[in-house]
Each structure stands twice: as C-alpha cells, then as structure tokens.
Length: 550
Image 1 (cartoon, rainbow, N blue to C red):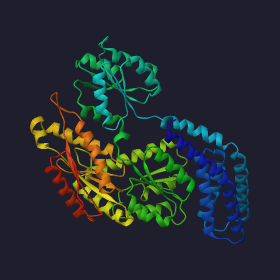
Image 2 (cartoon, one colour):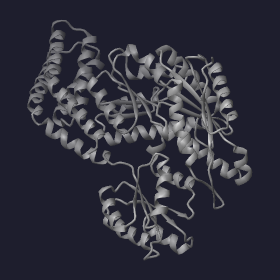
Image 3 (tube, helix red, strand yellow):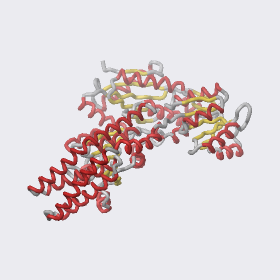
Image 4 (cartoon, helix red, strand yellow):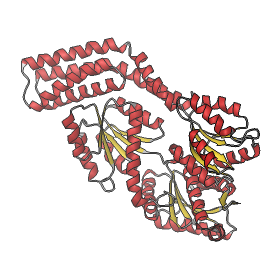
C-alpha cells in the first residue's frame, strides 16, 4: 500500500474515532436543547434541534451506522413536520419526540462498539481501487528501441517500465492490471507474439488491459487481430511520440487534467473533513467552509470549479447561499451541487430550481462522489473552455490568461506572497513550419503545452499568449525559483523527438521571467517578462533570463 493511501486510511480512521467519541456529546446536546424547549418554546431553537438531528442522520449514514441513521432520520422527519406546522407541539407530539430522542441515545451507545469493524470494511473495499498507480509498460525485445521509447514517454510525466521478455511482462501485468501497455507486435521468434500474448492475458484478467500495439506492419489483418486482442490503438513505426502521448493522455486523464477545484460548505466539521479527504485523495484541490462569515472571502480567492453546499446551514439555507453566489461577479455560471441527507423529493426539486445544478443525497459512496464531481467539473470546463480556452492547446487563451494574471496579482499582494510570470517562446518556430509543415508545428506547440501542464504544479496557470508564445503564472514563487523550474522543463523539451514524414527533429524554447516584487501590476510585469524573453533570444536562445528591473 502506498503512503498516500495509508495516510487516507489513517485520516478516515481518525474521523471515525472522533465521531464515535463525540456521539454522547451530540446526544446530550440534543436532549438539552429539547429540555430547554419544554421550559420555554422558541421556533428558532426547534430549528437548531432539527438541524442537529439532520446532521446526526447524515453523518451516521456516512460512516455506515444504518440503524442509528434510520432512527435519526425518523426524528428529523418528526421535527421537520413540527417546523412546517408553525405551531407549538401538543403533549402527544412532544412525548413522541422525547421517546425518539431516548431511542436514538440508546442505539448510539450500542452501535458504537461495532463501528470500527463496519467502517474498516467499507473503506478497504474502496481503497482497492484508489491504490492503483497509473503506469506505462513498454514490451519489446529490441531493448535499445524500447529504452528510447520509454525515455520519450517519461518526459511527459509517466512512470515507465520496460520488459524485454514476455514472461516477465505476464507476471508484472497481474500485479499492476491498471497499467497502460505499449506492446510491440513483432518479436524475434514470432511475428505476432505481442498480439498472441495479449489475447491470452485478456482472457485471464477480470478487467480488460489497456494496450496500444506498435508495429512495422500496417495491413488490415494485423490491425484486426490487434482489435481482437483488446487493442485500444495501433501505431505504426517509426513511432510519432506526439501521437503516442495524445493516445496515452486520452486514457490517463488524471495525468494531464488540471486539478479540479472544489469548495465544500457545511456546518458539520466531520462531514466536511470526510468529503474533503475523499476528493483530495482523488487529486482534487479542496477548500472547506464551516463558518458563514468566511464564505465570501473564500469564494473570491479560491475560484472553484464546483461548490458543494449542504441544504441546512445555521445562518441561512443552502438555497439562499446559492442565490447569493449567483449574484457575485464571475460566479454566475459556477456549478452548485447540494450535498445533504435531505430525502424529500420536493425539497430536492426546489433546491435545484432555485440556483442549483444537482443534488447528491448523503450518504454518498466515495466513488460516486468523485464520479459526480468529476462529471460536473468536466462538463463545466468544457462549456467554459469554449470561451476561455485556446482551440489547439487547450490552455487559457490570451484574454483569459491576462484576467487570471490580474486576479493572482491581487491575491498575492493581499497575502504578501511572491508571484512570477514566465514568458516562453519556441525558438525558430517559423523554420519548423517551413521545413516540416504547419501540422508538425502544431504538434510541437501541443507537445510544449502538454509538457508545461504536466511538469508544473496544479496551482500554476498556463496560457497560450499568441502564436508560439506561452505565459506561465507561478504562484507563491519568486523569480529565481521560477527560473529553476522552467529551466528544467527547457532541458526536457530540448530532448524531445518530434516527427514529420518519418523525419525526426528537435526544438528548443527561450524564456523571460519577472516577478511582482519588482513589477507589481499586470502591465509592468508582462512588459518586463517580454523584455527578459527578448534578452534570452538575443543571447543565443534555448535559455532562461530573469529581469529584476535594476
């Protein structure tokens, strides 16, 4: 088990232990509030009792205590009906609620002893899938060719292992069934060994292995057999590395996808921590808000892709909060998903009609939570991308990257953190187009865009500034640190092999860097980075230059 999964399990177990230890206190709070209501009736206090019962029901479901959550659900429904009647309860109703409270308290004590076992089983099943590591296996008995291919693939951030013997590969794929296989078709002793081996392996595996076949043979019969062996792609030699990486990226989206930004608003600290841990484990960037007085600042600073909001909040309803969000500049189209144990169909419909996009009922299975958020973010990004993304590279376009720069400068100045802007420009790009054609030039730009996205942090922002020029906003990074990172990417890019009409060629880039310590606004930092880029070109290209304004 890798460290990240072990850490995740530890986090989940800590939340479990905290929840169990806190159960008596939660029950005592409910009983105390209820007793206060008997002495002096207040509709506001009844709302608090309802919200706490709602929280107990939802959190119990989340941690697998189905019987306790069922009783808490019944209590919540009784309290909800009382709230909707807007009248003081009669003696029979009060007695019913008191009896339900006692039953919830009794069951909470009894079920707690079984909690760790139930919880561990639930998440051990889930973590089997989360422990898979995206890898690429190169299988070819031509070791020189295999190592060169592995090197090119590794430049794009993939973890690559080479196998010269089919027997060794057979054992490895059983241990790592999630690996993407680059299988050579022809081996020295059998012209169809790769396809034959994959057919046998596919029959033995419970889930299909993702395999890309590589071959010198381009006839229909070979391609047909490759499909029958489960091939998801068939590339002919010499291999175009850009085309290969595009194929890999399409099957391993997490490798290249900018991390999803998720904001969760919930007054239940346990649920917040639980859902945040699940989403963070899947690679998302998560911010949580428990107190309403911090929600506005977080919204404006974080710029989320999707917001998960509990329907019941202490100072306002989730629906009211969603309406406020819709009024904020830049957040009118942000995806809002209600996350609540509310199971009344009319309430769900009302929530979605009033400023919401979706409704997820607690408890939500971790896999379904990740899937639902992923689906919503991808759709939102696709729609937003039509307006702010460059069609060729998928990066922010000129207008969008300038807007992002302005936003990040404001944030950095407020937090007093460093920020650098790197301007990257492909060297002799016109010669690439002249010598190898515009299509080859486009592939070079896409390769550089992909490399920048993969090698930079999720918090860094990349855009196509125009033509062969790219802009990189590096948050929390001063100019020397930014130069070190970009220079490493420059070295890798200079070693990449590009191809056109079976001819291989290499390309380099130059870079200029400025930071907001010396150039505090969008105009000055952009101009300074451009001047530094000009100096890099003037000094001979294929280098990184920093300007300090001195």
